[in-house]
Every structure is written in structure tokens, then in C-alpha cells.
Picture (cartoon, rainbow, N blue to C red):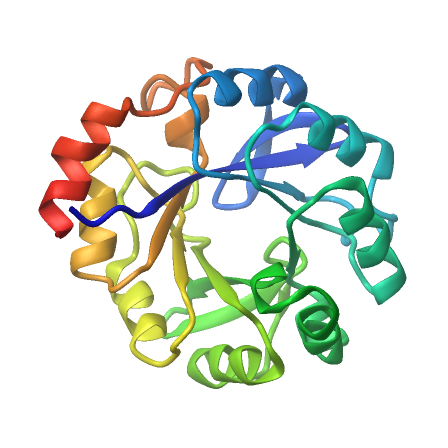
Length: 257
């Protein structure tokens, strides 16, 4: 039976846990530490925290909050937001974070991808790529929480990130993020077919069965989600949750084997 990673992606804003829809209208969810404690109990594969305002506001990563999260987190932890240079990366890794996630700096300072890989290993250097469709249905890459358009075409961008030393790519559909409409399978497939490193599908998951779709039809190596793990339904009542091992086994792992 094949097993894949199923990863909650949690968003930080001003130290609090929030959730957005299409990268807009952040809704306060609660204290990130409480969420980490619940995910510890549920034995999730790994956690990703993204600070959605650090880069946009030109702020340093909130090292105290990252330290607080890492101290409580029993599983591998990835962090992204406000990272611009190697000194910041060293400090974040020193806190106990296993993966550093680059988005804006993958464009503004691409050599950082390789510098991280060279010192800490490729698995530590992760590039997060946010994508939405233009009026013609073409996938366009963005950085800085969907604010800035990337000139490179998506295939060129993912190949470039891989060649620079990225060990993994997180591909997020801005159009699907927080909507419960399912993953953008065409987008995931387009990326997966053009790189040899793991691709993590993100944005739009509405149910556990969507994970299977992203793996079998999109070619993703792992799946992540936000709303699905912080809301109890599309009505958005807050409930930190994660599928049981049996649910994952029956609905995902057995079907992708």
C-alpha cells in the first residue's frame, strides 16, 4: 500500500491563525499553538506555516512566534514568509524548522534556493508557487500573496526552481484556495509532468477523496490543504481536524497503490 504525506497548511497574520479565500479576506481562526497541539494529537505527517503578511509589509519573520510553534510541534515543520536571505534562514533552521519555504525570494533572490540546498540539503529548500488563471484560462504565477505577477511561464519557473536546487514544489491555485471546489488538477498535472522533484498539491480541497484525485490524475507526490483542516464544512465553522488513519487508508492509500 502506497502512503503519501497529507499536510495541513496554516496561515499566520500578526501572530494569529487565519484562513483566506482566494488569498483574500483573512478570517481569524484562533491561536496557532492550540492548532499545533491538536495536530500533535492527531499525528499529522508534517505542518506548514505561512506568514501571509511578512513579505507584503517588508517585515522580518516573527522568530518568537516560529520558536513558540517549533517548540510545541512534534512533527516536521515548514515555514515561509518574509525570508529574503541566508542569515534569516540560518536563524529559522536554528529554531528547529526542517523546511524553509520560498515564494517571493525565489524570484527576487533565486540563488538563495541553491544556498539553502547546499548547506542544509535539497529537502530543506522548498519553493512555493502561487498560480491563477487569466481571462484566457492561462496559468500565471504570482508572488507576495498573489500581489505580484511573475514574468516567467509556469513551466519555465518550476524547471528553474528545480535546477537551482529546490527539493520540493508546493503548487497553490489562488482561484481554488479556500473555495472547497477541489484541486486544479490540470495545473498540478502540468507541473508534475515537468519536474522530477516532489510536487505538493494545494488549494481547493473539499474532502479526503480530493487527495486521491490529486495523486492519481494530477501526479502530485503529496497533498496539502487549509480550509479542510480548520473548518468543519464549507459553512466555515471553525474546527481543527484531520482524517483518521483508517479514513486515509480506505479513501486514499489503498486507491493510489
